[in-house]
Length: 333
Ligand code: CUA
Image 1 (cartoon, rainbow, N blue to C red):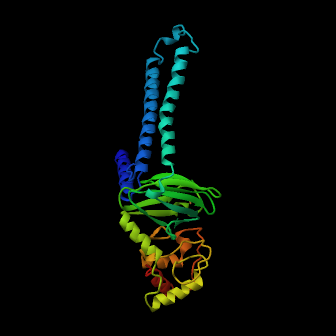
Image 2 (image 1 turned 135 degrees about the vertical axis):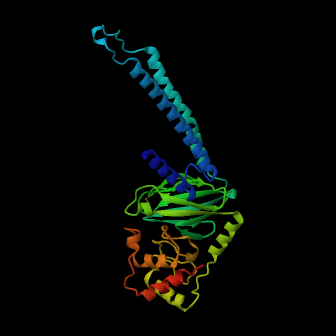
Image 3 (image 1 turned 135 degrees about the horizontal axis):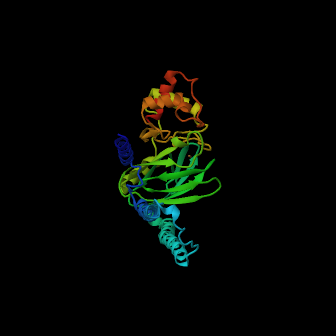
C-alpha cells in the first residue's frame, strides 16, 4: 500500500512539473540541457561511490562477522596502515573530483560568456519583495512578473535586487542565479520553443517568498517583435465611461506606486509592478489567473493573497468603484 502511495505521489509530482514547464529534467533550451548533463554526470559519480561503498560494507559485515566458536580463537593479526590501500582511497576520490570539476568549471565559464549582442537580447531584472520588474533597455519597454522573450536567441538577464537577496530560477530553461543588493549578476538563458515557462524566487526573502513567481513567455522572433511594438505604443485610453471613472480612481489611489505607460500622467519612481497593457498578462501579482473576479479580490484584500506585500487594501472604495477600476485595468491593451 505504502509503495503504491509513494509511486502515485512521485507520478503526480513528476507529471505535475512537466505540465507546467517547470522541470529541470525536461529542459526546453540549450542552457537547461547542458546543466542537465552535468546533473547526470554528478549523479552518476555519486551513485558509483554509493554502490562501491555499500558493496564493500556489506561484504565486510558478512565475511568477517562473528561466528560460533570465535571467542576461543586467538585474535587475527592486527595491522594498522596499508600503504597500498591509503594510496588507493586517496587517489580514487581525487580522480573522481577531477572528472567532475573539469566539465563543471568549463561549462560554468561557457554559459556565463557574454553573448554576441547582434544575436541576443538584454533584459534587466529587478527583484522586489515580492515581485519581479523587467526592463528592455534596447526598446525602452518595461513589464512585471511576466517576461517575454524570443525563441532561438540568447537572452542575457542582468540581475539586481531592490531590497533583499532573491534568486532567479526558471527550472526548464536553466539557472539559478542570486540577485544581491549592491551587486549585479548575470544569467544567460535560451528557449527553443514558444511557450510559457514558470519561474520562481529561490532565496527565502520574506513572508511571501513562496508566492514570488513569474512567467517567461517565449514567442517566435516575429511574434516577439509584435509584442515589443505593442508595448512601445500601448493603448491606455479608457474604453468606456466606467473605465474612465476607473482611470480617475486609479490616478487618485494607485499612481504613487504603480505606473502605466502612455496613460497621460507622470510616472515617478516605481516601487510597485508596472501595469501597462495589464489585460494581456496571464496572471495578477504573479499568483492569480488574470480575470475580473480575481482582480476584484486582489484589490480588496491583497494582504490575504500575498502576505507582507506593500499594497494596502482599498476597503474605503465602494464595490462600484472597485468594479470601475477593474474595468479600466482589464481593458488596458
Ligand atoms: Cu524573493 Cu524569495
